[in-house]
Image (cartoon, rainbow, N blue to C red; front, side):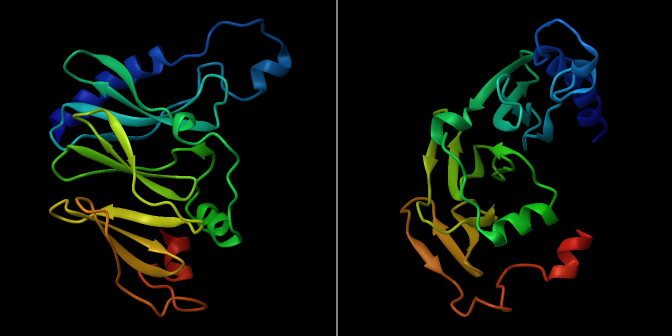
Length: 207
């Protein structure tokens, strides 16, 4: 743990320096306006399971509220763009009232890639974009779309052995086989006050 903390403390200045905004004429309004003159800070910094890299979300230079997925490799001390969110989806998001409320409760703001998870073996990343789920394979450096529905898939996570991805759709719990792409609906009574796999309102507020 101490080794990871030390590595992260060394990585942060490099990440921040590499992503600073370019110089521009200053005015009083610009000094106090967004984005910060120091650049938009990276968010959701996470170590890969093997500790070889730090992944993070970074706003685009021309749209700091649209986030892409990046990595900082601790072996060669280089930042790399892993997933360009606009290359996968660049249109406006049509959020349902429930999705808007969920994001507000979880303090999720912005566009593009807003959250992600590592697989336990460190070979892949899972992230939602415009309500659908994507699987990024580090070996091939390619993203694969896992779902394609009008409904939003949320709370996605890898199974312990990494063969499945679970998620919530319209208040029901699903599992998806990563090898075959087959979906398995695990609950069917979701709706109204029944929210399978979801914390109740007070718990969500506390978390």
